[in-house]
Amino acid sequence: MSNRQLHAKITDEHRQRKAIVYLRQSSLKQVSENEESQRLQYAMKDRAQALGFQEVEVIDCDLGFSASLGARERKGFDYVISAVACGEIGIVLSRELSRLSRTDKDWCHLLEVCQIFGTLLADEEQVYDLNLLNDQLMLGIKGTLSVVELKVLRMRLLQGQEEKARRGELFKRLPVGYEARRAFEQYNEVDARNRLVAAELERRWNAKLEEIEKIKVTLAELEQQAPSLSVEDRERILAMGKNFQEVWEGRSCPGELKKKVARTIIEEIIASDADDNTIRLVIHWKGGVHTELIVSRPMPATAQKTSMEALEIIRRMAVRYGDDQIASVLNRLGHRTGKEMRWNQNRVKTARRNHSIPGQARAVPDPDILTLTQAAKHCGVSNKTIERLVEAGKLRMQQVAPRAPWEIQRADLESEPVATIIKHLRRTGKLTLDGGDSDDQLSSLIENKGDDNARHHE
Image 1 (spheres, rainbow, N blue to C red):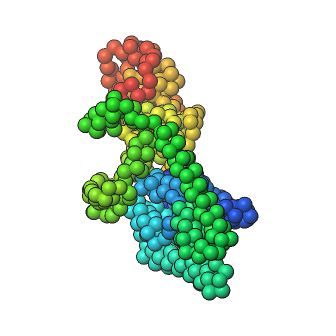
Image 2: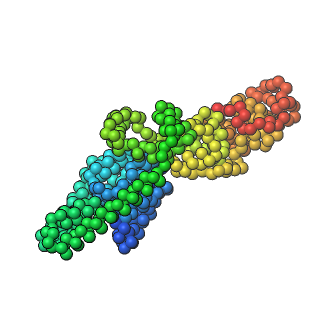
Image 3: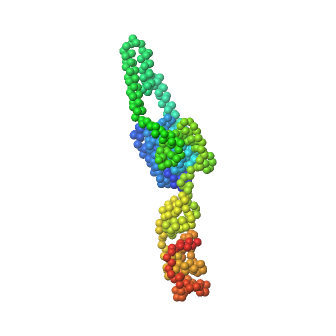
């Protein structure tokens, strides 16, 4: 696949979200001995940046933990799933996608969530879009091969154990309580006349019983150390249940505590498409009850886009004007950012960067182009005089956008008929337009201290 085809799957919306690099090795032995594999996995961060992602997060807390069925909970993988479901992730990278999961359930769950929320997957060679049939087939094959590989390894392990068992060389240590029962059975079955054998078996049995007693004592001590609920605490907890919504939404219940509660009472949540705007959620509670909800599809931050009209104004004004002037014009025209906020210099700069619009923080001066106030100062008249000349068609004026500063050519102010009109005004105090005398215009010689957009000229 060519770079052009590869990058065609990655849109600006993907790049404006975060990239996640997921690392995993199946055992602590691999972590300590196979450092080259770790180095190659960490290098996937460079690949994410090369694909155009500015914010890249590396998840390596699952190093040393297996992804096979029955293994311990993988907090890193769970975080990846939840972050994708929040619409925060544009792409998930792993040097080998099979490292993400070794079970059909987790693999299918990851693919389903990535497809719903438009998140890409990538390894060291390719980028996969779950909305494309070919990529779905490719990832399905990779997932199947990964599961088959694990099952083959397990089958070989079991076959090896069976061969040892046939040779009488397989020994497995039982738990302490199965061990005590087995010791008793061996002692009970031996012939009492074999005193040496019986004594040895009795010794083993007594040792296991003592070990069990020690464990019971330890458990009892731990139970005593656990804090007990007072009557007052119990009543407070019951009161929280009656006012659950108020407690849940209160300041005393931070997000971290809500997550702990959710992880305690929820077994899993299965998401599927209901329609283009909603998602069907089936919540499997720890107690076995299922709840089905239809919720609005969460939109990523990039979905809150700046309007095309505002972007066009920014694009036209950025050639000459600074971000501060652009923000002023956008606010006067009633435009807001994608998050419904007023424009300022920093927000204009961010919009230009996101849409690759060149520009500058401050206006670029051009001695041949004057604003309304600059033109009035150049001629020694008021802003009102310049406005009257423009309205009468004697002086040309341009605006790159409505309510943007006027652009007047210095040469037009120094050429006819403007030069003669200004000269006559200075000599007589009257502004003469269209060959006739207007009313007394002494005020036209007074400088206007207002800004170039004081009257919001269209």
